[in-house]
Each structure stands twice: as C-alpha cells, then as structure tokens.
Amino acid sequence: MSLSIDPARRVHVRAPGKLNLFFDVGAVGDDGYHEVASVYQAVSLFEDLWASHDDGFHLTVTGDVDVSGVPLDERNLALRAARAVTEAVGWEGGIRLQIHKGVPVAGGMGGGSADAAAALVAVNELIDAGLSTAELHALGARLGADVPFALLGGTAVGTGRGDELAPALGRGRFAWVLVTDGDGLSTPEVYGTLDRLRETADIRPGRLMPEVDPAVLRALRSGDAAALAAAIRNDLQLAAVHLRPALADVLDAGLAAGALGGLVSGSGPTVAFLASDDAHADGIAARLAEQGHTSHAVTGPVAGTRIL
Image (tube, rainbow, N blue to C red; front, side):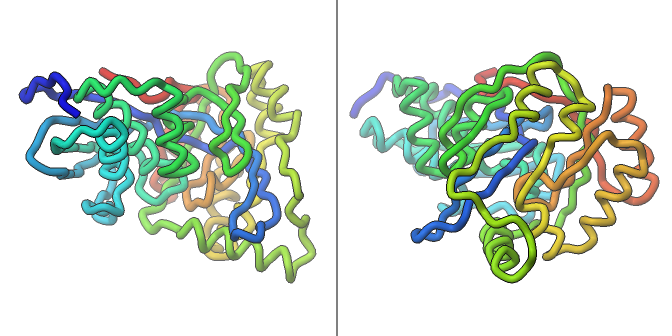
C-alpha cells in the first residue's frame, strides 16, 4: 500500500502506567488462562515514545528507571505493535521507535503495554494509516491484555482476560504512593503460584465468573479515598508475597507510615498505598524513602495514550 508520507516527520506520543485497584482472578481454564475482573486506574508515571521513518524496524530505549532488562528485539511489544499497524494497512516501509520510560520495568504497572499502546497510536499517525480507535484496540488486545487499557486510560473495569473494558464512573482524583523494586516478578510464575496455593492452602478458590466488588465502584463514584482503601484487593498478592516474602514487610511499612490502605499492584512487585491527599502522599513517600524504599507519589486517574 502506498501512503502519502513525510520522511522527516516525527510523532511524539505519551502513554500512562496503571494500577490494579481490584483484581479478582478466576479459576484456571482448560487453556491455561484465567478469567479476571479488574479495576484499572491510569496514574501519573508515563512512557514517552517517538516514531519516525527508517529503512527497517529499530528501537532504542532510555529512561528515568532502570531499562537494562528491556528487550530491543521482536520480544518488545512496541516493535510488535509498530509492525501490527503497518501490516494491517499493507504498508511496506520501516519504523524507528525511541522510548523514554518513566514506568518501572517488570513492576506490574503495565509499562510494556503502555509502550505498545503508544506505538500503535504513533505509527497510525506517522504513516496516516487511518485505523479507527476500535481497530487500534483490537490490535492492542492481540498484543496483550493490558494494552487496550493503556489506550483508554482513566479508570475502567476489565473483564474476560482483562481486555474487555468499560469506563468506571468516578469523581475527583486519588493520591497514591508506589514502592518499586528493580527485581521484577514473572507474571506467569505469579499466576501459577496462585493456582498451586489454591489447591493446597485454605484460601478462597477462584470463581467461575470473577466480579468486581460493588464497594470499589461506589468509592470511585463518590471520590472517597477511605472507602476505596477499605475495598481494594488483589488475588495475586498472596502469590506475589509467597514468592517474595519481603513484600509483606513493605506492606506493613506503608501502613505504619500512615497509608489508608495498600496492595500489591497486578503481579507485583510494585506496592501501591492510598493516601488522603497529595500532602499525605508526600509524607508517606518521604517516610518510606527514609527506610530505604524507592517510592513515588503519583495521582490518578490520568488520560490514556495521546499524541503530544
């Protein structure tokens, strides 16, 4: 397909990281996958991506976080997303992607998915592919369950494998403190550990039809941080703490520092603590930093993937 392009053009796109405020994980299916019911919130840590024309497909990565573990080959979701857009419209040129990461790598915050979402939007714009929002979401869902939410942003309920999204009505903003860890956890290993624990331990089994606790949605609608703190939950937290017991100490430290509530985000190892406001979050972050933890005060919800 021959599209009208400007070879000197460069498109800049920004995509947010996310937290899982609630994560109900269903029983493992015959195909090895789990149905989930999740509440996602996009927060103010971002991935910046620039797309430009090139002779082939190339990627460079820098960051405010450690990027040493980020693959630069076809394992990278952003490169795969760029190829997905060009293949969808039959465009035969090359793409250069430059990513500057602000979301911790392998932290359960969807940084790789945000990169993929940014690449979908940037390449669609760069080559004037004309793909609709729905078409980009469909491509994103094939790349990973968290990619559609990175495109959407805000706060949303995810069902199925997490990619069937419905915006959640909410009011106001929430202040969070994140404690990150440079040593990531494997998402498949965390899910597998949860399955084994459910078989051998006296814990709640996975539901056939996972669902979001209505208390979470009520708290979001009212903008009540204390009510939200009482309702947040993550089924994967048990497995993450089992694999990395030090996460239990982090959770205790955040609550001792005054957080309204806390949980492991996604498959971890990032731990998220809810504060009453920005000043409260800054104080919690400072106390955790004094104890040697890497902490970030962030807010949510923020917008999804957008061109700058």
